[in-house]
Image 1 (cartoon, rainbow, N blue to C red):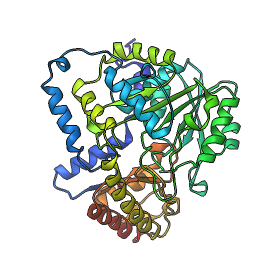
Image 2: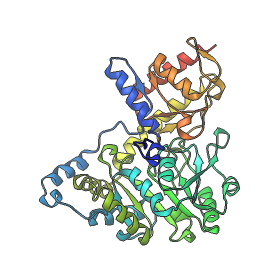
Image 3: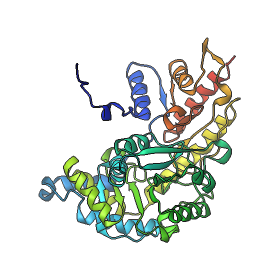
Image 4: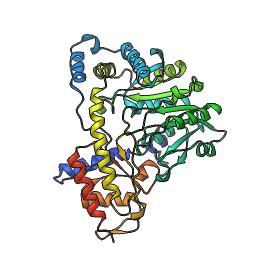
Length: 401
C-alpha cells in the first residue's frame, strides 16, 4: 500500500482564491492581454516615503542584522500598544502584543492557540478566504452565519444565537469587512459583544480595515465597546492596508498575556522574529500621523461611489453600498442561467471565468467567500482602470441572452 505523499491535514487546505485570480490575471497581462484585475486586496499607492526611509536606515544598523526577540522588537510592541489606545481606546501593555509575519500569521496563531479539536467558531459569511483554512488547521469547526444583501451583510444577535451550540468557543468578528465592506454601528457592536460576553465566548476581532470607513460609518472596536469581555478578546491588525504596506509583512496579535505567550512560543518555532527591517518600517508607520491614510481614503471613497453606481446600472446586478474597507460585493444571482457570448453560466464561479476570458476583467466569485452568487471587486486601483474595467463588465453582461 502506497502512503500519500502529502499529509491529509495539508492536502485539505484550499489555495487562496483571491491570489489565484490575481496570478491568472497577471499571467494573462504578461502574455499581452489587456486584463484589468479587481481581485487583489491591496492599495495601489506606494508605501509613504518616511516609512521607506526608516527601513533604509534599519538596513545600516548592525543591531538589526542579528536575531531579535521572536515576539517582536520591544519598541514596536510598545508602539502598537500606544497606537491601539490612540485609535480605538483599548488600553493594553506591550506584553500583550505579538508582532507577526503579516495579518495571516496572526489569524492562524490566534486560532491555533485558542482551539482544540472540535471547538466551534462562529463565522459570519461572506468571509475572507483565509479564515476557514486557519480554523481548519487548528482543528476547529467553522459554523457559518450567512448574511446577504438584504441585511447589508450584517449578522444580528438572533442569527448568532441560532448558530451557537455547546461546542461554540469563539466568535470571529470583522468590521469593516472583507469581502463585503460592511461596517457594524457602535450599537450593533455593543449588542454582539454583550451577547458574546454573556455566553463566555472568546471574540477574535480582525481590525485591519479600522481606518477605512466612509460616509457616516464609524469604526468601533468590540474590545473597547464591551469591557466585560475582559480577557477573552484577541485583536488582529497590521500595517498592510492603512499604510499601503502589503508586501512588508508586519501584523500583530493583541490578547491576554497567557495567550500572547503561547502564540509567541508557536512563532518562535515556526518563523522566529519578523524581519527587523520590516519591523523598523512598521515602527515608523504606527508612530507617525495618519495623513497618508487620509489621502488614500479620499481616493477610495471616490472610487467606491463610482463602482457602486456603475454596478447597480447593470440589469440583474444588486450592489449594496459598502461602508468600509475597499471592496464591493454585488449579487449576480439575477444573471445566472443566462447565456454570455455563446456560453451559459450556472454559477458565479463560471460567470467570473467567462468574464475573465471574454471581457478580460478579473473578479473573485462568491464561492471563495462562502456565498455563491456574488462577486468581490476591489476598488483599490486607479480611477481610469476602475471605470474601464466595470465598463467592460457592464457591456459584456448587457449582451446576455
